[in-house]
Image (cartoon, rainbow, N blue to C red; front, side, top):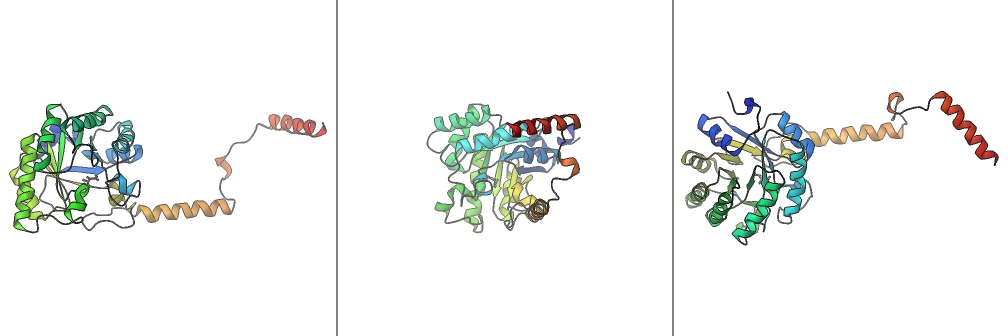
Length: 289
Ligand code: KIV
């Protein structure tokens, strides 16, 4: 029986079991109560309250402005949905880099809000932070390959692993996160051969986004899957054109309001006839004063 069909709450150790059984892990981001409900009803294994909210919810040009409070706010909505899926909360830029103590304190805020795990970006340079979090009892998902929080020092949102040396660096980063105690690792925008090598070398599951099919699982941003974004990255797949559907639906609503066909017969309530008589009498007596 698959972990998902057991219909219970999914926890970090279930991800490890799924890798052992060769079951693909399905993750999607969600930032609101109903996005989480929809994802859970679809049977996804994990929901990431990603710092991508900075771009798809707030409209920022990058994830750098996202704060711990932003993630906490959206995490609360996802937790309120009461999902079976594992809830992973992203640690925003500058909430874990300064010191281990600060990282533990900030990750603790997200765990107390109801996250089942946290995710942070980086490889060997954050291994000591991952270790400190795990020691404090906080499950950690790593994130190697492209790290969007570092796009300024990386020279943009570049594909990782094109050169052999860079591929090796991605592999070493992933291994150092596993050694530090991470229970899984995201591989982002990396050539598929490197992602396959990482997946084969690690005992913890790899969850890929833009890193090809040879991974233990996949994650996509919910806006890209549902087409809430008009434009999606090359590695995503749009299963619905929600943007167009939303525009069409709102055009129909606007048209109905403008032509007085909304609200219709059963979309409003009437006063009882005897109350209406009394109402009119009161109006008349008011008018007579
Ligand atoms: O914030 C996010 O959505 C992410 C995914 C791209 C993995 O980190």
